Length: 154
Image (cartoon, rainbow, N blue to C red; front, side, top):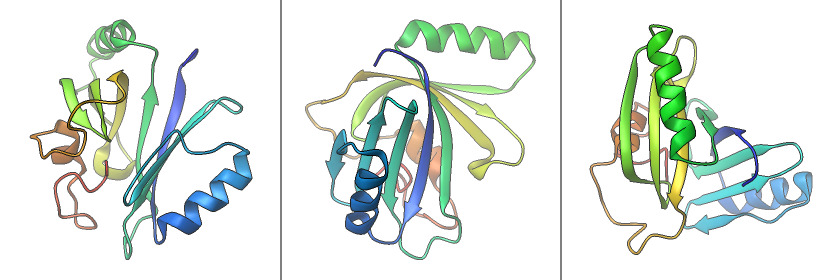
């Protein structure tokens, strides 16, 4: 990745249909696919689009985030958030979304789950990407629409 980009995570009814639609819309294939999960690393416009199969979800928007180039940017953002008096939760080397990530969750009004995720992928292909973990993402993403831990991150 060469720049910071917004992450938009959507709950979709049918992962196959949604993946086909967004492939056609943006003209790129998914960066990563797993059962019930796909993510697109789109350069133009700069967007990380995450699709999570979650039939029957009351909200189509799952969560929002900012993907950065690396952990140094996450640390810099954390310092900025703290200086601004924002409430933030740190998750380092978190196994989430089929990758290892350093991240900060920032409490925010009027967004799904009540937070924005600011993160950097440190290992995009870990040895056990689908293993159960105590992921901060899984805990933060559990909601009425996805009561199973990890449902938002695939």
